[in-house]
Length: 391
Image (cartoon, rainbow, N blue to C red; front, side, top):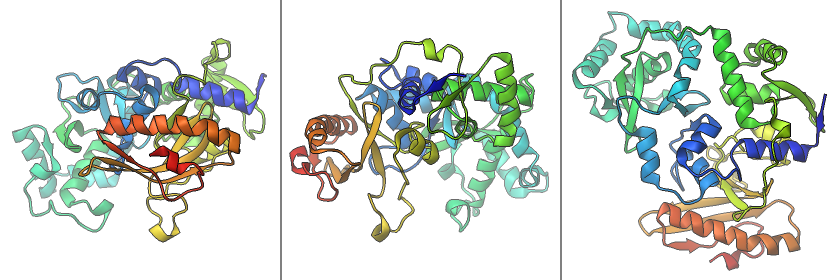
């Protein structure tokens, strides 16, 4: 069994995740990651927009919206609960049949589908009559925000549960509001067994992550480890995956065959410093991020302001193959300003700070132009000593 250093594992993982791979298009990024997580936080830029920026730099946001959420007879990408809410290639819809069936068999879904559920039947009637609809287009006394399920109304809860089960599908978005539509293919089967679906997902996760433990691979598509373990064993026996060891990792790692013979990515490119969103697979798994990068990231959105250490919604700073700090950005849209609310480095030397600061300024200016801001406001909080030089 081959043994890799942690740095080798880190570089292989970054290359597999499309960093410094010479990707040119939005499609190439999504195909490389196999999914893009969707999140509503919009203080700087929404989570699903950031992984493409990390890999491509400044790109056309309107093109992404068209590809991801535009209406079409046969869309290239679909939304489903893959990692969390996520954008996936249309071809992968069949790989989540087992998950939709699991939701469909839940009592909460069965209650919705009963003919006597008047609210649900009204929802079905609206969708049959009107086609794709956003939640705001449903006019009903029960379409009012409540106290559970993130304050969702009863109508919204019904719709989201039906999306989980595949009875209703996401038919794009308008102003980030999901459009709900009846699934015309509901009841059709893929012809794949549950085991085959899980195996395909695990192979895709391994291809995207590069070097990954059982826990890492299961987490990519939110599989349970007991469900993933026997399938990984079979994949190794079939030669679809290989096992390696990584220095300092407690558990063995899995890789796709031939990964180690591929040319190594040059991580020192023309844009060596990149902003990374916490919902990017580079960083979304806290334990893996600590193991690969010796970087402990905890999102502080839900932490009271007085108790936050770094900021509301900090992004990672990826320099070469290292996570070297974090920055809390806010896009003040009315004033067209990009506020650098705080800026922190992780144990950088004075020489490293001098080297990296111009690269950081370059990346922040790129981000400013990308979101349509005109002024970059330097931080007043953090441990980065050359902060004034960022204005």
